[in-house]
Image 1 (cartoon, one colour):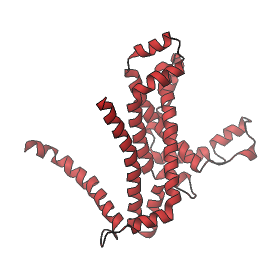
Image 2 (tube, rainbow, N blue to C red):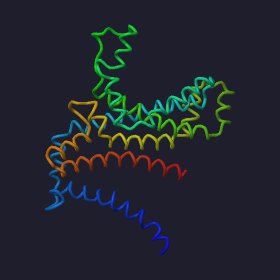
Image 3 (cartoon, rainbow, N blue to C red):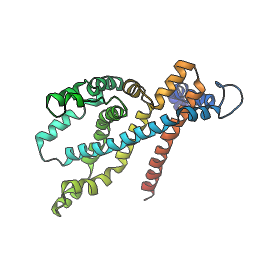
Image 4 (cartoon, rainbow, N blue to C red):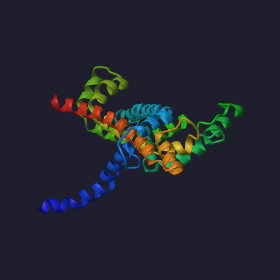
Length: 272
């Protein structure tokens, strides 16, 4: 009884702030504002109006996740296997900065950095790399991917670097003795040993990117856009919580598919 009383406040908080809103969202998605008969009209309308945005969201988040994984492994690998102490120290100092910057601030930074007259194009123009007339705005799907990658790569790299630092160094030394290159050691010896940690970091990043509103809203002011913008639009402009919750349920399903692969792989590893 005492143990139940100890965990009761936490359980009540979870139930009130997470379980109840989730349950109400599910009911609202299959009914008329939580009332009336059950139907799938909200999902039909969501697919009819926002099918391009659904595909756009999946492509953007999946592409960002792949790029984040590649960069995180590269950064963590150099931090672990790098032989230049100065370069390792500088990289270790620089790559963590985006961890402490909220998404809304990241979006505002990228608006000034990736705009047609932004900092990036000004640097390229002043350096003679491109002509002033060739400057173009990246405030579209490319800007969303760049922002997501810049923001989430340090998080995954931090997890992967910690996992790489804890592996048995004898395998790395053995690879070097047999003449394997640093790239081959990282891909064939190191990455398989930290695959679970890498997958956890990528899944968490995938979920976070699916839920971000500020980045697509501030960077990509055109169609197609991401589902979070559509949900905000349905609520703020039409008060249509049914379709908004239907889009939210779709986002849950996208997340659930990724989580299922992770759980399946974890069960395989435990079984082995």
